[in-house]
Amino acid sequence: MKVLFALAEAFPFIKAGGLGDVGGSLPKALQSEEVETTVIMPRYSSIPHKLFKGCKCLGSFDIYLSWRKVEYKVLELYHEEVRYLFIENEFYFNREKLYGYEDDGERFAFFSLAVLEALGQISYQPDIIHCHDWHTSLIPLLLKEKYAGSEFHKSIKTVLTIHNLKHQGVVPGHYFDDVLGLSNHTNAFAKLEYYGNLNFFKGGILDADFLTTVSPSYALEITHPYYGETLDGVLRWRFKDLIGILNGIDKSKFDPRTDENIKVKYKSSYNKKMENKTWLQKSLGLPVDKNIPVIAFISRLVEQKGVDLINHIMEELLVHEVQVIILGTGEARYEEALRYFESKYHDKMRGMIMYDEAFAHQLYAGADILMMPSKFEPCGLSQMIAMSYGTIPVVRETGGLKDSVIPYNKYTGVGNGFSFANYNAHEFLFTLKEALRIYTDDKEGWNKVFKQALNTDFSWKKSAELYLQCYRNLVGI
Image (cartoon, rainbow, N blue to C red; front, side, top):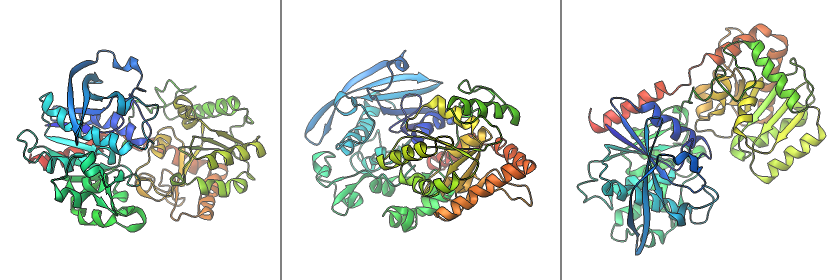
């Protein structure tokens, strides 16, 4: 069975968020005697040239965006036994950033069309195209509309994974003719139409053969208006074809036994983890004391991640004997708040307005608690990574956070973290204080949570098996 992953980013080539982690690890986890995986993505100019050693060009081809002829190249590279194909075009992908441009809709419309054209040009016919997020959600619709008469394409099935429904690929209505060239396909317009504009995600959700999202809870949440981002009705219509599969993490990358980024490697030794903590305190100029709990936040500084709750409780939290370290970049208002808190509480708080992969690993290894009070979280990887290092998450019960964090029960001793239900600063602070109380006053209880977090399996094995079953069902195996 040949499965083609069509996506906008994949680690180690380029990554803006969790999609890049999935793109770099799920195809590798699925590669087996039964599944031959290939990844196709844009060839961004910002991908380091050193990663293209051994790359070869499969050809230069033309594609039409309505009346415009656009040239592109298809490059091929093997990385960790997975075949990667890259669509190269200077105009669309020779940019400083991955996203955030006014013509993003046109860029990824081009990419989706180029994917389908390239398959015929290089004579590669997958059984399934697995599309990810809005960037490639046009592919299912194009297959059923523009390529419906193609003998080469008609047997290809599609899976569309929803990583984050908030970003949908909404573009002006004139794209239908001027970019997609679908003027003769009235059914396609009805599927894409969205309050006078076009919505790529809507079209993909309606036309994909099967839908997945990145956690079971998120699959249910997005069928309700609060989380459905105006597409809840469409998702209820397709609910029988939708399942949630919790993401995993690449355990070879996030393993304190082998991680070259951290100062002291460890397996299950709490004392060795504490050596990473004291190193972290010293390196940041904080008071070095292993008994002071270190609370970390490692994420983008945006509303979705619950930064408003953190800002609301920060001063009350810092009254206690704690240290808070925040790592990330994002909206200017949140970055400014970090600068304020750090200047006022310099002996207790650090706001690291940057992103550094190596330092993130050091923070996972050195912190005691990770806070993730997300407003919504389709899956979330930080809580899984933290637990792999024995750092205990305090999360809001939403999406993948609810599915991966078992709240600690002081009576039974069961649990790998702490959680609260409502998006409310008081609940968040109460839960943090409970975690701090156990850390300070109940060493036996904390040791249980530590060990149970370390022993939670977040590898891709179970998730890959569920995806494999979806593929089998689609192709009739």
